Length: 190
Image (cartoon, rainbow, N blue to C red; front, side, top):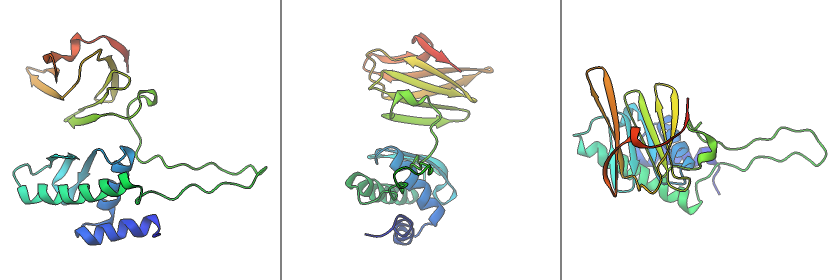
């Protein structure tokens, strides 16, 4: 079996992208079990995100670029889900030695750790969100302050940000239609 860095190099060669870009995609997809990734990669038009069946790229009308992003991400996601692409297991210290514990953390999450893994997430301007159906929570980061909301029985399909007159409205779509985030109970505020 190839080592992790060699797998990333091969991925970069196969898709004709830089190794740092391949590494960023691999880290992001490892963090979500191959489900989705957000990225900021100049080769892909800057900020964007991917999940199966959906590609958003900085150059949103460049369909060739979107197809390229989809091909790379689909390849990586399949390898992550199959278990063929994973970082090396941390070395364990001999019994009784102090040693240092190492673990793979992928990228640092901005939301509270007890929420689990998000089913969906996104970002726009100085706002980002992550939805956690297992814990029925929506985390929203507004300029570095994280708010956590109780989503109840809402099944969130997307979050939208509207700015006007110096204010901002944050809404999401659920099975009940369009809902203002301000209508949800606040669990914690940052």
